Length: 358
Image (cartoon, rainbow, N blue to C red; front, side, top):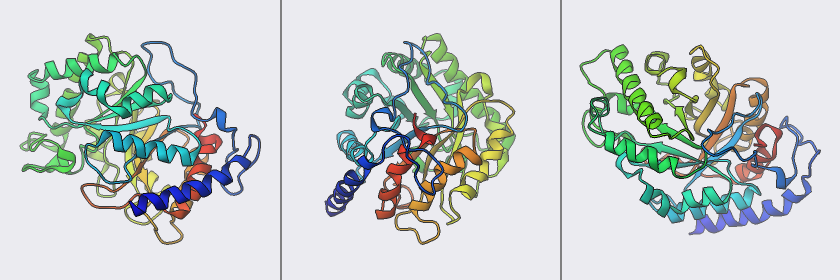
């Protein structure tokens, strides 16, 4: 409660400062033009059944997941935390991340989820991070088709563009996990452990393509498929390249990128930006989860991280066309990615910049 009260104090201070940032003014040192509040996070309304539109190169969607209290499965509290953060930013997150178990992605669950319903009301695009808590063999073999069909119809029924991030960070802990609990509650033996790296990649491709085919058969044309491996320093290029389902089955590609080694944003994004570019297609790149640690020491403070996000999107990583902040504590590692005072000073400026005006 004290942390939440402290954040509300930061919000109050930020709310006083932001109105002076009108359209046409430049923000010193961040390499972007500030825009009028009413224009932020409001891309045009896509036609029914269409996917998330892709912003122009050098610009990207501003996304996020906010869990300030560290609760698990408390959808109403998470939505409340999200709206608290949006009040500080004076804008909505355009892409809003949600975590769903494999069998929980149903029409009834989406209807009762306050966060999903708020997305529809607040002009956000939902991003469903869909756990693979069943094995890839089960998906490929068709035994999970009723669940997949139900998920396709549920997301189709939202009548808005949706991003689906199936089995995110599969190339990290889930790749080798054989005994529960696995990271992110993924299935033990998600992959056939007798397979080589290349064979595991092919297995992932087959499962992904099977899900994609079921979604197409159910007419879920509003769902954008987002390929999102782990982009941490320990992850090499091979697992990412071998597992890529191909551009016919992917609408967005990218990776999760946290500054876990205290090197700053540019070095963190550089780990696998080139890997994504080497896949040989023009699919837009998204950073699915990212942030700098709470009260990280200079020079790599949260303030610097958010400044670099704005300038680097335009100068160094123009193919990155969406970035989603993870604002909370990692339930697996305990790493603290909550906003500190420097972050709350700069995050609104990031959200107001021309790099993230969508």
